[in-house]
Image (cartoon, rainbow, N blue to C red; front, side, top):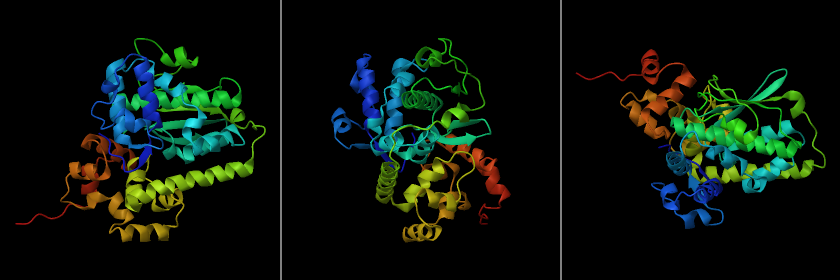
Length: 334
């Protein structure tokens, strides 16, 4: 299973458990092999690991089936208040575009296991999701849950159903288009990406009665929350998480430093204090004695194949070929 170095709020797992129980699934089945209890999830301010929520989702998919509407229904039940300070930052955003930008800027405070990015063209802006490091059925659940949550939020903030186009990378289920059944919009299937696209004109809408000072204060609080989580795992843990969850090309040290509101020099010093470096974390393959399985485990991947898929997306080569082409194999003795 996925090993995440950063903790996350237990609110999402608690909501998923509540919905599952309401639909007739015993709590013990939902929590099987997660290492979680109902009392743990109910505790105020409780935090869990991403791998625990992943296991919980695996149990949900096993109980309700991959083609059910469960992920959509779960995503539609998220309200701004459950996101804490991130929710307040979203509510105080000046435009619908800023809503998306803030949501993605602090997505580590959100609940999805997917990694999101914005892609903007002249006429539209898309949220693209990456779930390559998740098992396929968990990844699909994460995408459906995330898009249902975004759709619901934009409907509430914009005052009506958003003119969004939704695309999924898997075939249309035999049971029918659950996106149309739950959100009221027909999705496109067998797409090259999991993507939700909005017209730029729609996103430019100015939201009335928002307080820019309050918005800035909320953003500062979001930054502090992420800093607190980073402090608990150290700089190396945070960098490993950033690299593990990278979408597309792996982020540079400069990009990661900006994410954590540090200078490159400060990040380098923090890593050195933990007896490591950005390069060592990014390119563990330089240690020729390590197997691909060792590298995958060190970077927090569930399995070696999951690591290989993510590595190929970033480097356009499987790790073995990349290692060979960069002459990183250690010479054998004898």
